[in-house]
Each structure stands twice: as C-alpha cells, then as structure tokens.
Length: 171
Image (cartoon, rainbow, N blue to C red; front, side, top):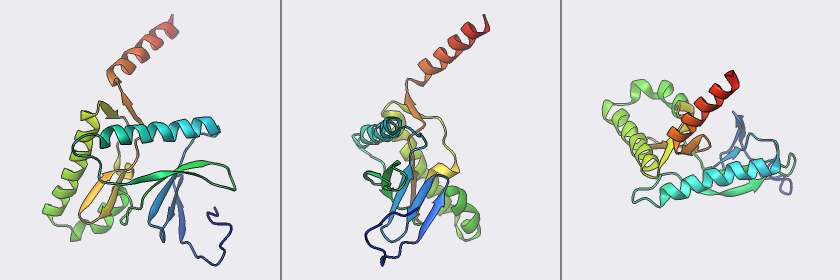
C-alpha cells in the first residue's frame, strides 16, 4: 500500500496489521474503515470522530490524538489518522514486556484504561468490543482505547430491539 506517490525518495516503514497501516516516520496510525462503500466508510469514521469528540468534551478526555480523515489514492478507501502508538497494542506489548514491567506499571496501565472507559461511559457510550488489540500503548506510561467503531449509546435499547427482532423472526 503506497501512501505518498509524489515523493519516492521518502522511505516510509509501513506495516499492514488488521486493516491498519502504521507509518512510523510520521508517528501516526492510519486506521482504514472496513466498509467497502464510500458513504459507509465516511459515516463509520465520522461516527467514531463524534464519539471521540463527545468524550473529549468531558472534563477528562481521552489521552490519544485524532488527527483527521484522509483517502488512500490507490484504493480510494477512507481512513482515520490517529496518534501513533509507539508500543503497538496491549495484545503485543504485554507478552513482550511482561517480565520487565513492575506491578506498579501494570496497575498504572490498567488505571489509564479504566479512566478511558469511565470517560466513555460518562458520555453515555458502551464499548461493545473491547479487547487487547483495541487498546494502544503509547509509551511505558499510558495506554488508551484506540478505536470507537463498536461503541454505541442506549445499549440496553439495542439489546431489547434484538430480542424483539428474534421473537418476530421465530414466528
């Protein structure tokens, strides 16, 4: 996947991991939308940005930066441009550093994650798919929730609607 067609001399160290392109020199994380339709891609990214801004309006906002939205020129896919996590996801970070991390640091990372979840919940959202690969470790001092695409408001209402749909389909 080529990100800069005009400047071939610039050497980007790109990695493609689970629909994410990591550009190490610019210190950003580019997260592509999973939808194939342009409008669906834009809506998914805008929804994630809305959640991010709703949570940032709280007194204690998220710790990572959301830089904007861009479009991949070759594939015409839209993606969100976010702060680059120096240590990758929690899924990769913990096994690589488990023995060198003191309990205080492990608890500090857990506290950062708990603070992010509190901000998300205080804004009225529920993260429906929180797992170690969606938690980003920026340095040895903090981590943050890296994606909000699976977040929703009124989660209880959605559960009730699913139950009603299932009951209707069974009849």
